[in-house]
Image (cartoon, rainbow, N blue to C red; front, side, top):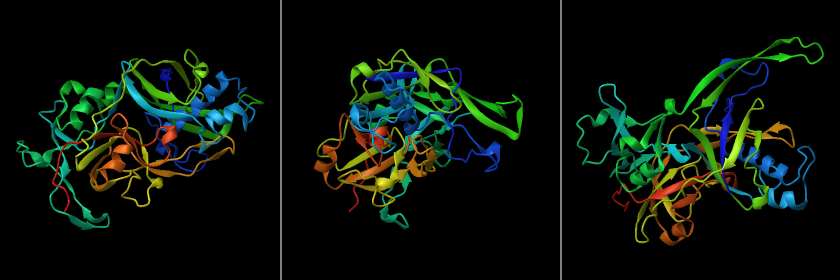
Amino acid sequence: MKLQLAAIDTWFFRDSTPFHMDASPQTGVAGIFPPYPSTVTGAVRAALARQAGWDGETNWQGGELAAVLGDGPADHGRLHITGPFLLWNGNPIFPVPRHIVGSRDDGAAWVAKALLRPGPATVLSDLGAEMRLPETPPSTADPSTSLLACGAAGWITLAGLRRVLRGELPHSSDLLRECDLWATEPRIGIRRKDESHTVADGALYSTRHVRPDHRVGLGLDIAGVPSSWSPAGRVFPLGGEGRLAACQAWEGPEISFDAPARDARTAVLVALTPVLLDAAPARSELAVPGVRIVSACIDRPWRIGGWDSRQRAPLPLRNAAPPGSVWFCELVDPDAFHATVTNGLVRAGAGPAAGFGLCATGSAPAWEFTR
């Protein structure tokens, strides 16, 4: 079951900044987009349950609902979600991988110039004895290599990402600017007393909504659920402030990649959705069998929380590597690694049933294996 969600007016998704009265400056509460997988999963689970006859209020402990959809934020039953992905004209797009570096020539659009790869020398650090810092390959012809930077706030098409994982640079037509996909709208709100319909004292708050372009939506693939439960053609709440999403069937392309060859000794993993890191035995690991991480290109970690609607309490904050993060891995047990790969995709970290940890695999750029 593949679904596409479109905004009706605006959406409001917030980060982990406290958002209750007197806790923090309201100006520091930022909106995010796309939303975290757990946000979309929670809304979709409720929509699926309503299609199956749930009244929206009673506890569904036991019975078919609990068996299929699970019970609580950690138990997802047979439900398994892939995504959500940002869609552009119905086609998935992804954050530009962090190992792509480029520059802006004479104020023009950012142009990809090189792919970073692990350097030849190991560096002693708190990350481990065999960590290798990323570097541009010696073949990079650009004389201004030191001025190259990552393509922040950029997005790449499925065809472009496949090109990158083969070791090629993306075409300019493969790249999209974030400012062309959605706009941010600051909002000011007040709390009103129900009995008098007057403003409550000191209850002014601010939010930042996103208004997606009419060609932008969210796509996800749902498994383990009866097709008769599909909410396609319906409208349901998504995110904060009672904002709504229009749901319809998604006829998008299959998201697949060319996995490294069986005899390959290295692999590149690119995060397509946030990777929760608390499932790994060490901070530098991803809980992916058969691999050893030797280098990485990662932005600042996200702090992802959430809301437990049963307990009416916030969920603990968890560390996550953002989409677009890149890990350079050496295969110490190729058979164990390939056993986890399906269509060039692998799950890393915790929360795979809720959409977290989906990574694309590739074999390029290549580097010298660590001895």
